[in-house]
Structures are given as C-alpha cells and as structure tokens.
Image 1: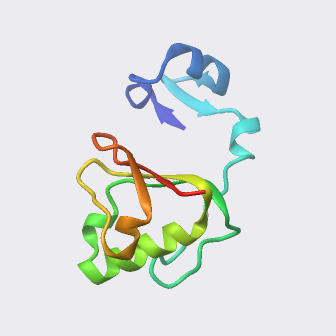
Image 2 (image 1 turned 180 degrees about the vertical axis):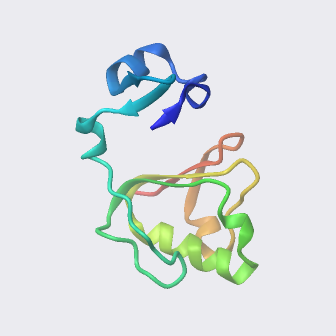
Length: 118
C-alpha cells in the first residue's frame, strides 16, 4: 500500500492500470502486478544473483555505502547477472568501479544507464 503522496509523480494512466484506491487516500497495487514481483532477502556481496540472466538490473543509491573493493565485487556480480545486451541502472551519484568499467557501455551519463555488450 502506498500513501497518495508517494504516487504524486506517477502518471494517472499508470495508477489507473495498476492500482486501486483505498479508504484513507491510499493506493494498493493490483494482484496481477504483485504476483509478478518477487521480493527476497539477499546479501549483495555473498549471494549469487538469483536466476540470471537478466534484461535489467537496477541498483539505486546502494553502491555508495560499500567500500571500493565491495563496489568492484558488486559491479562484477551485476555484470555476470546481465544477459548480453542487458541494462544496468545505477543511482545518480554512483559510478562503476573495477574491471566492469570498460566492459559496460555508458548509454546515458545523467541517468547512469549502461548496457552489456552482445
């Protein structure tokens, strides 16, 4: 469930398609979308990515909390989890470290969007 304020920047068409308004000004994501999302607990540095390969990996504003060696390990894990042609989306203050820096193509510097080669 989300408070109305949390949905303020979502396009009305997206809200209408995927959410139901509930009493008290809250929105609940519809079951058909919730059943497509899997939430798991995972240690980013120790656990392998579940069920790769992925078309898209997003990691926004998390990498900055790791030291440089940890950041390099995370980048390698994300790289390995992507299928060829897959995308990596980072937070706006984050950057790629380690060997993956030369193995991912920067598509949009402002949005920190990268692509794995095919």
